[in-house]
Image 1 (cartoon, one colour):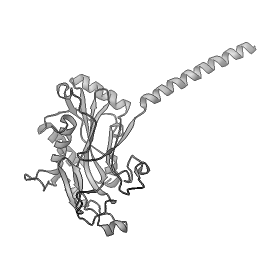
Image 2 (cartoon, helix red, strand yellow):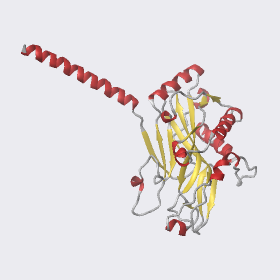
Image 3 (cartoon, helix red, strand yellow):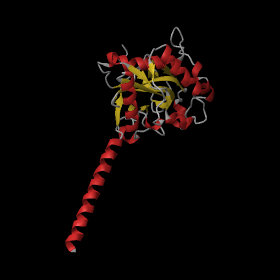
Length: 290
């Protein structure tokens, strides 16, 4: 009798260990890896463009909304600007557009570039504080897509003979102000050849609200190969006095509602800001800006 009980216990133990092993393997497969890196200068991109990207073909997924943008403007309707962006990608940039995936937006690659101190940022401010400098750096964070997302994209890539996919999001961030010269001039680097001047009395410690586009170049296995961001518009920087008493200027609701019409006044042709950001983002993800 004792031997029978011992044998049963051994079988149960083996079954338990096997179940735990299988559960552990499944958990590892579902694990989404994230990475962080300090961005020292614009334009804000990380990762190398694969040498085979041009010959292999690239497709776009429909542009989505960063959850951090919904946190600040949850009631805003972004449908019009997203449709305009996707139409521009297909017509002006001549890219193949894949359909929206059944995997929810929370399963897509997540890219954040900005201040680590922003409320809701996926990075910890404590890891970037310095005793010698109160000014925080710009940080790039990106999270791999889910297993379901990877499987769905892999199937689309096989079906259409595509090797790389670009995932884009309209998002919200806080960008740090940078010292332009020893004479006190300051600026915010929004992206490729895109800076905005900042009054010299503005505080370097107080970031500026930015609405921007983020993107990830992902291969057919779901591996993120390159990420980046391009700013569309920014709030007015806070003055030194305002930053001392804790006041921050935000992007007005009027600007948000008119985001599709905002133009780059610093360029001779004054193109639409979102078109310039989108063009630069795709160009830098696929061609490394060349």
